[in-house]
Image (cartoon, rainbow, N blue to C red):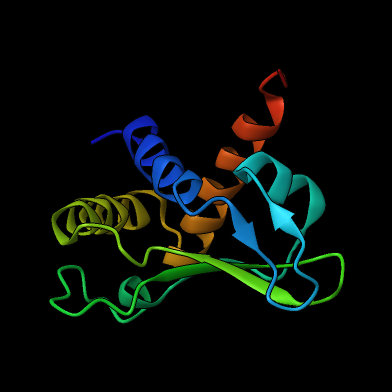
Amino acid sequence: MTETDVIQAMRAHLEAQFPKVCPNCQRRFATLREYLIMTKHQGPPIAHDAEFEDWNPLHPVGTVTMANCPCGTTLALSSEGMPLAQLWRLLNWARIETRRRGVNPQKLLTHLRDEICRQVLAEPTG
């Protein structure tokens, strides 16, 4: 699995979480792109299972990235619902890459989130 494969899998999972509605102001984010434009990241993403060094969790806690809606409500995108086999492949890649790059899971996940954001926002609107 390459970084490109990982980003494609993560992006597809994130994009499947839309449309998304803020539970407070009812703002509707039709797409990941709209969400990224309208919200502000709140801290780094958190890969709970990787932080616990549980690379093949039977009951994953998951990964989450949070952002604030313009109304101030914190919204989350997560790995919830990702097939377990796919999650394990991603975690295995992360285990290898954190060691190879000498970074913690949070730093690796921040890099991946930033790359997904860059790709999504760089695409022409149409």
